[in-house]
Length: 305
Image 1: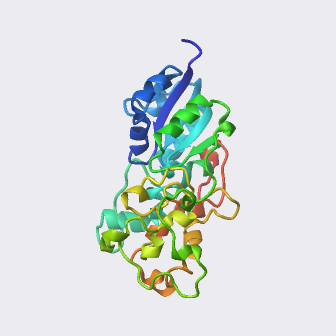
Image 2: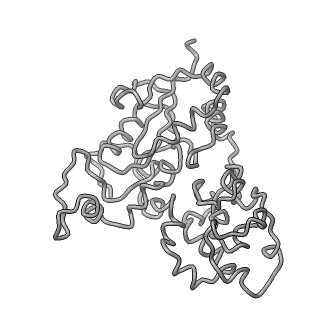
Image 3: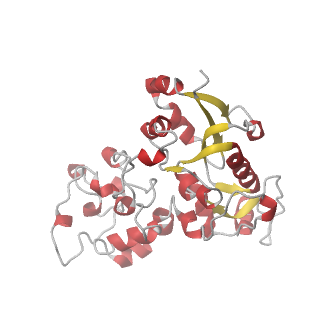
């Protein structure tokens, strides 16, 4: 069929888990394949082999290396529409946590040679900071999640090219969380809990109670809903993979969660929690360092800081 949508799927720095989620449509993928012609998949081809007339391209992964940048710019030129796919593409994701450190510190830790230096010089140089895809090129739709839920892939294809008709939830995860809130619904002057617990320390009898009321750090208060509460439904606190809600001023997801829970849990204990920054910025640290957005221009003319 000549009226099928020409679709490509490309991967930058990521774990390729979003691609697995794409395949997790199971039998629904048969209906999707009736609508699309998958002309390129990076699992088996080099990105330079992407056709010049792609209708829609899903790009997974953060922009972490010189090759990622080159690839993102080239793919933008070849596609009518680009979808940022997954937390790494949308917000920098797990790779973005290296923005806490310099490239020299990263290389010294990974390839130590002593005296605070590393002699590693690979063919694919690390960029000074990990960037989200929308901060480097124009994207037409952002598909959050680690990984995105398969139904959202279907929605993108079925609504192509009218992505504004896709209604992603705008509230925080708390709005769709099924766990009970007791103390949080009543105004009280004291902290809900004086102890910050790890999930494995919880009493199984309270499995249906809000994590925050049980003294467990949960990112749901500053994370966009839309995942159906997949983690909390199996007694795992939210870790924020859907990124911040789309309201203006909510871009700093880490600051949002600290602000929200500082009246629930003791602030002093929050600050002494091991790897607190790694928790609240696990998926969205790059958003804070995306200080400047760039158009799809020749990489030689562009300085990425």
